[in-house]
Length: 215
Length: 333
Ligand SMILES: Nc1ncnc2c1ncn2[C@@H]1O[C@H](COP(=O)(O)OP(=O)(O)OP(=O)(O)O)[C@@H](O)[C@H]1O
Ligand SMILES: [Mg+2]
Image (cartoon, rainbow over all chains, first blue to last red; front, side):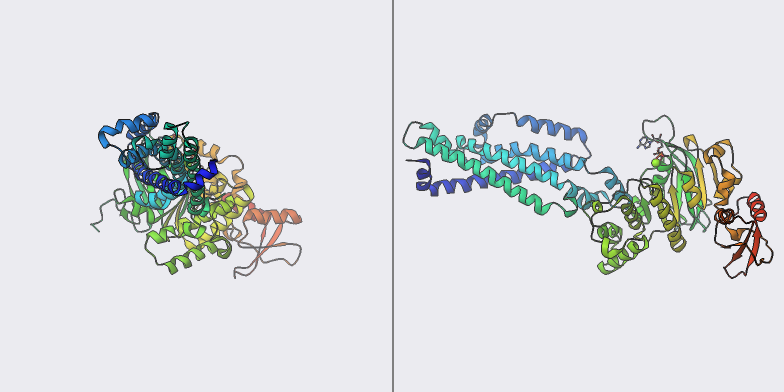
């Protein structure tokens, strides 16, 4: 059976797993966005804590994902929970880092002028700093998403949802009937999901970047 | 309001600084030390001095962007040394040197931001924005919906001034607002700003490096020396005619006598005979003595006829001008 034939015959299952994959990625990134942006804002007056957080979340990225999934089994068991937690852990760093960078690179003259006009720190944040930092923060979310799409495939090792199942099952019985096609369909699905989400973020970026910031 | 304390300034004083000082953390010397001055209502005061002498620091203590280490600040009879800084700042227009327009807001949103914070309704804000853009010479129809980066440097500077004026603050602080502009545009902006000030009569504190800009704009000029020493605080004419010390003399530079002519108006010169019928150049009372002299030299005559301002006509000679200019000692313009 050719690859395309395989895909055609199994399209229901592949589509189901693809949707699952996207869902778990978006859920994890959403949680990570809340945590990352939240930590970025919460540590504004605590530069040391902020540096420590960046170091820690950055270091977590270096743990091989396969190991992290496995290490969480005793705590969270199998399935959705360890997958979401692991993906969230990975996604926090790029979002936190870009939140910090985005806020720090707002032109100091603009902040100074806003202070001079009598904007309080909350108003400065909501009216001036966050809108200006937004494109950078959004880019952090985009990077996190693309990264996590690939990592989510490994989640199948702990029976997590998504396209990883195709890859793991295919690889575990390689040489068997359609084993290679099954693994390939998983890989292709992951790449396709990554590309689609990337495009989606470009679009969101276009739509949500304030007009005055476009080149 | 509490009873006036002994140091409460009289009603014609808009800004009083009393023993104002600032030492930044970790510095061994004061950036500003024990500065006292009164600035009158509607007065245009210019701070000049060498780089690092504390002009910006002083300006920023007035709206409490920098907290003073010592001393007190009164604005409009109220001791504002300890009031809520955000509320204070909405009553004080501030133009920073780097302009600092908010890039994701349109010109109208930038100018309308303070009125919005003050809780004005939309229609009133819109009218105010258009009025202010007109005031600073920008056509609202063309500019209100532009973003800052779609403006030239000079246009941004004007929007910065309009924005500072938006809440109709009685006090304006301007830190080198025309600093980044080419000399010709700068000259025009200065002229426009002087005309504007004649209409709006704000109390203005204006910082510049440029002594000529100070002489042209200021009702009074504060010349600072190193370590924020206030070397002289006087009218432009006084500074040119009677510099307080060698420091001021060297700061003002050469040609003081000639530059003074640019500050005197023909109207300031008394006397004059009945007009002759022939050969004299015609000027108005509003001309500067400098401009009148230039006209006389151009046409090679030593007489001029002054007309206008309902005073009738009179004639002045070259000698009248020079004597008067030499005598002038610091009368207000
Ligand atoms: N935030 C700060 N922390 C520490 N020192 C400062 C700070 N701001 C200014 N200073 C110092 O205080 C002194 C006065 O600075 P200020 O900016 O008021 O000078 P200035 O007269 O405005 O100079 P310029 O004409 O260059 O703008 C300088 O020696 C400067 O280095
Ligand atoms: Mg300065």
